Image 1 (spheres, one colour):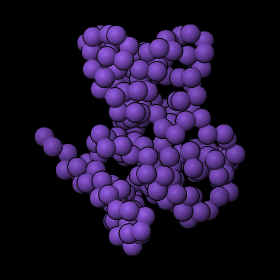
Image 2 (cartoon, one colour):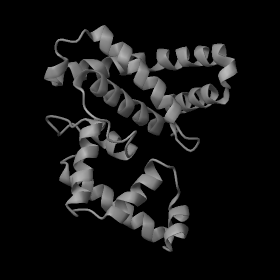
Image 3 (cartoon, rainbow, N blue to C red):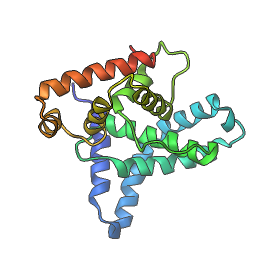
Length: 201
């Protein structure tokens, strides 16, 4: 079944990015439509961050919401042509998290985005009592790479696929692998990451 809401988001973002900077009024109109569509999602996210982050308890929710809008803007502009609506939403949430964190908690930005499949698993996993935020997952995954718990080569393939939008075939041709090898290695890597982070559904 086609996810209509996801497709609408993708179409809006594509339309937004199709306009030149000289067409700012058109971009603003489309941005307003995107914001209207994601308004409840942004509110839910900032309220959640305010609830679970002690450093945000004193911050006004309206201020957090305005910061989330900046994250929305940056997330939209980071979207790639190959992204579907779910991936775009994952990018936006990742940017919202980081914008709030950077603005109010003073933490250094680690990466602009992360594997949307990991974010999706995090968001939908009901068995996790305290869900881990996107950038914390990134930090933990990078720590696994440094400790050689997961292969740096496999992690780089994951970034190429999930962040840069490269297909298994494109990655395979670059590295001299068959695309099924790339597929199997990335599937195993994702399972390993979710298992180690206790996000397995």
